[in-house]
Image (tube, one colour):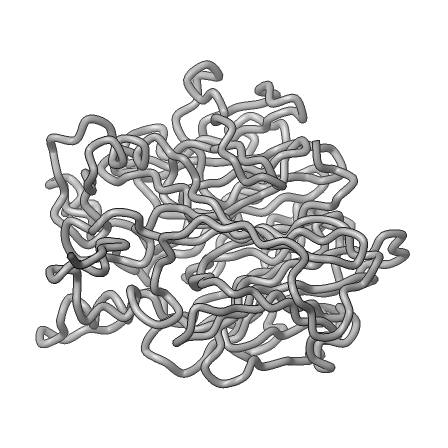
Length: 483
């Protein structure tokens, strides 16, 4: 009898989808591997956990699988006393539990026809499964996993990776939480936003370190929008109203067609951290789209934000393009590093180019979130049909200088957070860590870089005899903060 390990082994498994093959092929094993073999030496002063989230579909998709559809799986590299261990676990979401009980997928994916008979649904349009596969952020000694198009916020133990419930949104009288919420590591606060197809089209709030609701306010927008990220400073929050969103006329008919409207400006709303939505101050700049912010801070009368601006918000298609080619085009990235300055006194805004190299998925020293930073660690992209992280680039945001490291051919990296050295004395005194996976074999590495010298290459490579599929966002949880 044929032993079936997963739905990929079935004769009717989806074929010809590159986001189910090679480095994107899901793993169906939850594993724990202690004291990994290391080439080089793991620094003794590297203490904490590198967490990375990403899509890992457990059940056979109902239709065309989009990379964003996969169930969230957390991968962890745990560093202690010069040793490193690896483990992975699915995020035990409400939707995954229901599908496990049914033994099959219940929700359509992002590219499938919208279903109207779902028992429960999430997302701004309320028709998707909250897979909690997008981001993972530290909060109050735990980690929180999040969904890109708004959903629940799940607590995960950063050491065991067990799902420990979720933020009580109903009890707090909140709707949903978007993926790119922010933790201010100095105050312990969790700042979040959500967006919806019905008014209020955006809401914003702050959780205190104990999880109680410290502040909440609706944000007035002209209509339904699709912001991906936000930014914070010590005293302000920056919310995005960008001209890439669902076509309003089609949305009224239940059709979610993302469209770029170049005749509209980009709007950035700056409001005090605990300000009412009516206190927001809007700044207009050239039309663009931003997936990920590097950081933001205050300089005199100005609020400064650094982010990766996408040069082609909406791909160009022809009538002959297939559904697959359209999906691949939307998933490609062409972004350059920019700086925006919003003058709170004069109301003027200015955009500046820092570098024109294609990089994205930026990370900074988490302790400096909302404070002035000099360095950013971004991923670079191979010229491939799929989104392939082929290297790391460290930027000096003051001078525009950069240094790069590229992974060997056939290996794909991950978003790579900064990990401060125990006893660190300055912003880049520490390490950068990354999961690097073989595209063809079920093997991977945990690579450690000296943050001051990325171009040197990894100073340590821990060998992981398991598949770590390519994924999305990550964080570093310092060992002394884990509950």
